[in-house]
Length: 179
Image (tube, rainbow, N blue to C red):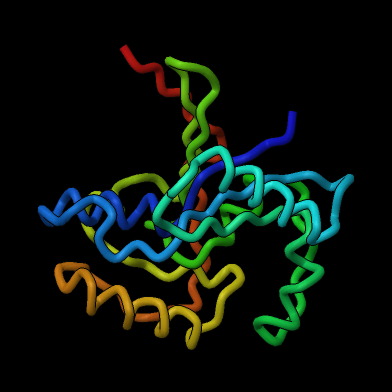
């Protein structure tokens, strides 16, 4: 089985919407579906997974952003202008996501069990606080993201950019059992 998570902005923004009494899908542009398969590094594999998901989900209203985190290092420089090291695990990839609030992934194990990976905890997310994660992004990437987010969620408490490295507070996935 391939490791995967649904994560990043769509999860954080859903929480922000709930916390600010908005429609749960308000302001969400896409759903990040991220997986890790170091044996299949072709973009065509991501496209195939995305097409299969679209068939399965029918008229799902949001864009599905499917990314194999094992191949991010291949295209990152072309998109962002600088190289990154290849990730060793999907969890390592999540620790580099742009903010403490968006460095979050969830996956369903079975009908009652879920896995949640939140390396920087959940406090900032539930406090509507946005803190940069300079592990991989630049200040300009951070500013661009928070400018859009502030127009959608003016309640956000955005912390100014700092190059200070964040400390991972939880390096294990959390199991969540529903009823």
